Image 1: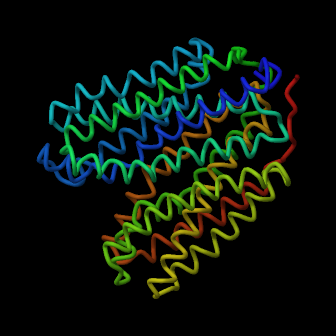
Image 2: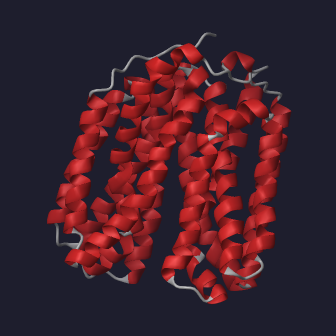
Amino acid sequence: MNAQDIINKKGRILALIACLLITFVMGSIHAFSTLIEGIELQTNVGRMSSSLIYSTALVNGTLAVYVGHILYRKFSTVKLISLMAILPMVGLFFSNSGTWIGWLIGYGIFFGFSSGVGYGLSLHIASSVTDKNKLGFTLGLVTASYAFGAVIFSVFFPIFFKYFGFENGYMIGIGSISIVVIIALFLFMSSRVKLKKGEVISNKKNSTSPKILKLWFGYFLGVFAGLMTIAHAVPLIISFGGSVGLSITTISIMSLGSGIAGLCAGWLVDQFGCKRPLLVILIINSIAIFSLAMMTSVSLLFILLVLIASLYGAIIAIYPTLVNHLVGNDLSAKVYGRVFTAWGAAGLIAPSLAGWLFDQYNNYNASLLFSLILSIIAGLVIWNIKYDVIRSKQ
């Protein structure tokens, strides 16, 4: 699994384009907010039940990344990409039942797992065909494409619903996703890229375990604030007197900022390594969270929310490269799968905890203070990680 597996430069480019297409359409899983109202009207359930569908998708996406290293060894890349195109369509049979359990299975399980496979496999392919000195930017590009997909499909889905109705519009959206994945499949097959099937290197297990623990906590603590503010951006703005229109605009710009920051972070990693940019990001993140708790202006709130979301995007873009640098390319898929569960855990805990604290105190000050403490601890955890880049055998 290295850049020498590429037959030629054209093949490498085709493989990377396939990865970008896959992550772009699989990022649509995070456009769920555009589906909530339609699902609730169709299934006659409340907000908690409809939100559970998205939570299930996050869990299954995380699970797919976690077991990714096993899938990459057991199945060919062509089969896995084909699976990504099929699963969302299978999920349609369940969601078209118009029941809550149908959406839970169709969207939460089938589409959620497909999205996780697409994200993890794209990172795996990209890291396998990219030279070490360009790895940060490439993985940042793949991660940014995932974020941009969430932004674009947040626009596309409402348009589909407006002109074709909710059920037919959702079918068109999912059908479009599968078509793009099939295009990516043909691009990858045309690239003639051959990836070696990784092996588990048992004698490295003990040496990587402490790193995994630190990486896990660093990731969990580092993304907590970003996930919390993204989930509660609308009520945060409204609580400061902002309009619903401003809230929707803010969410779109937050997602866009997250993707752009991922690209920039990837470039910085190639220039300065992972540790220093990550520490600077966490320091700025802590300052932004503290400022957010102090501010009363809607305009400043808007700026800080976009900043925190952008820093979150930078963190998730850096982490795949950080893991690759610390454990080497041979173990990166397996280790990143474990570390990625921190994102899944934070994604489930942060929004719920913020909601509970809001109910207790009728404001977000306690949530912001808690996030500030976690962000500071995240910086300390990253500071204590010994950063030595492992060069895989070429």
